[in-house]
Image (cartoon, rainbow, N blue to C red; front, side):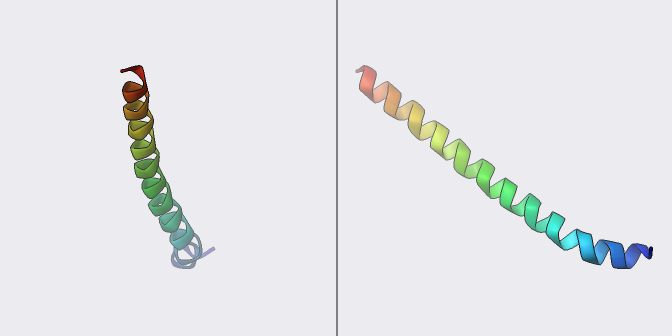
Length: 44
């Protein structure tokens, strides 16, 4: 199999996957911080 054709077929989905995982990680961090803030406010 030609390397260039393999990268062009597989490379784009991998790039999109890493991009989406990075965005999801940021959202999860924000959600975790919000839950921690809410927990602290409920304890007061």
